[in-house]
Length: 440
Image (tube, rainbow, N blue to C red; front, side, top):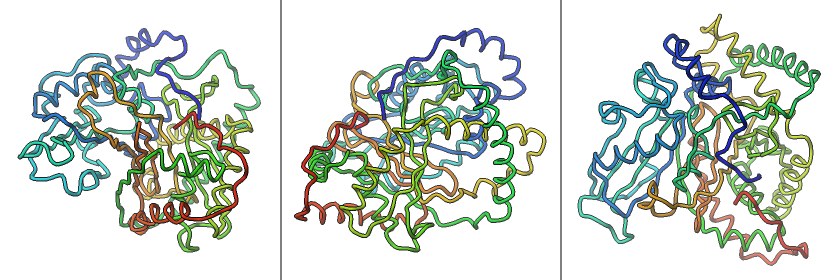
């Protein structure tokens, strides 16, 4: 994963907003890219939460929301009555913020995390919510006075936005594709053909094989980064490979916990500054697919994971992304004429992927937006029927944030036990240091 930036490629974005104003009145999601539309239609959501050393009341929470909106103007998009780029009214801020008083922080943040389906219940409200819980007795033994949670539709925020906001930096998107870096007509045409066939197959199998709704759960886990760095160096792998391997081995080690006996099938995301004309105009993230050869011995497994990730990223990483974006575009066209095809059965069908692994950019707090914040910092995502593991690096902690079937959530405790067991092992080393992680 490479460095990330809030910058965008040259465009007349401001002018395009003026021209699209009439369309927004008819369709609040008119400005959404196909990727944004797909996440909106699927009611995908994200969360960000952290404890605070300062007390939050309603006024302070509304002030914080206003600060964030000023840095992330995309939050003013996508709902009925939206005025893109304009500050929210006090009535709107009142509606999307809430404060409660609690005796203790036992069970937080896990007890707060949810699917956040309520965000979509009010089409005339912004697509995010700010929540605060303040301890009645003031600071606890760890200096925590309040806990803050931001919940949002994934179509308006991604992990790199969260990282930029943690630094009090602008997270505006502009146009993220690079129109000067052309993709060949043949590649685009091939992508469209694949999308047409892929959409038909996707719809057919979604309605034929869509599973029943499963018990769902949410968990978080905080690991010290220095501990994991030392272990990665001993193993001779990148830290990212160690995190991915620890989670997938702990959760999917039994045959009935993975779709294929031989491999753990994972989708994972990365950022890349080598943008093309075919990239999404909003999202910075790229999606990749990996088949991780399963080994019962964890040392063999993590080194295999490291090799697989290297092989994937040394190839052309644009082709899969192009196919995915073309598929989203095709679904949007079909939905326009046949919206009844996109009911709950469609969104419950997640294909053949054991886990979605997302490593977001480092969250290093600084500036007025986050001067109240205490590590660890937790952030994650929800998508119907997708087992998602989100890795959020701070200065001292890496948090692991899980949204997945309850049967997998029940095994989260195995992760730290696995790490401790490997730390105690006397395993042969590769005689080299792990390569540096630009993403961690």
